[in-house]
Length: 375
Image 1 (cartoon, helix red, strand yellow):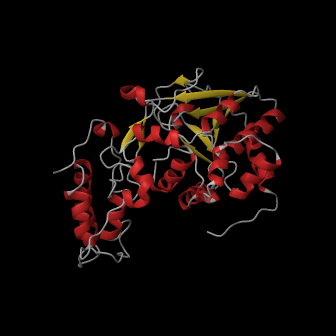
Image 2 (spheres, rainbow, N blue to C red):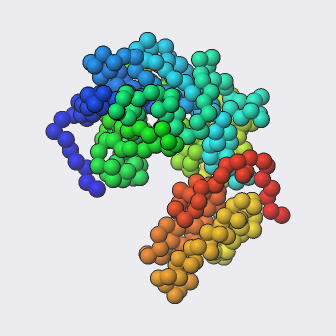
């Protein structure tokens, strides 16, 4: 999709989008993660809230326990702003651990290992029963204005990934209706969806907005601007590259993280090789998949891969009489079009089915006890 250039700057366009939401009379809630994008959205929303005399601004953050040092220090500074009504929420919810095949999930503020927590929520934080982020801004928690659903502002930008750009293209605008449980529906708004990284940092510099100082540390350690991410560092393979940086930047924090989560130290030392299958000399990708993802894999991965193979072969047979390709992609199959791709996608089990919609989401509670590896 080609870029569409505007006749006004993105700063003015973002303010006008937020003004549009306020004119509709909606209750506005900002989701703050501590990252640069939500920082910009929060400050833009403050500008508009002052214009409409709608202070204090409602801001919600979900405490993920394991974040780069500097993140929660910044959020606590934001919470002290008298123009903000800050809702600091936390829950015992499952997060993906891409660093381990035997422990693919970990639980924030896990009651079973309280002595290993990296930190504790601040005294004003609120424990909430909702496990899903969308439901934490439910109508039961933030009563909407009569006749108008709440508007939740977030920092999603098209420049961050192809999937985010496509989602914005499909919704045909900066807003979309989403929601989980009954009563939690809200209008999700992305006022800075067309901003680039340079726009974000220019706004923070020009207006002298406070921000997460973890970015300064990443900059000093030569992390490319497009790879600077604030979030739980074990969510996906993209975050793996930052663990080596974190080991050098915050050694005490990193040692605590290694005690808290399995596999982190190995990934920091060996990078992506620690979470990818290694094909042996003379081995086909099909043989590699059978060995790494079935025979030598934990039970949950082996069962998941065997089920997926059956579906994949059946799907491939509908349009081809040849065997499923080893390394060269089948041009008709959707997703994981060869044994090579399947091996790379499913080595860690892909518990949320990100590589193919044919893979169902895995219930984290099925794997909360220790997982035994096949002999």
